[in-house]
Length: 57
Image (cartoon, helix red, strand yellow):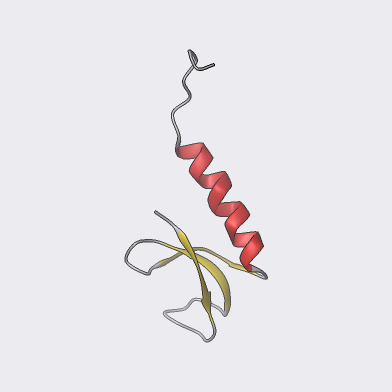
């Protein structure tokens, strides 16, 4: 599961900014200028990972 984290200084080659990090704290997507921007990306990515249920609703 990805979560937003603000990285303030160069860490393992990751530039400063808002990042989507995995459960181990590894930066996956970023940097983004705001927390909101990374949350949008996480939400879009999470939706892409979901299996569509053609029988729903």
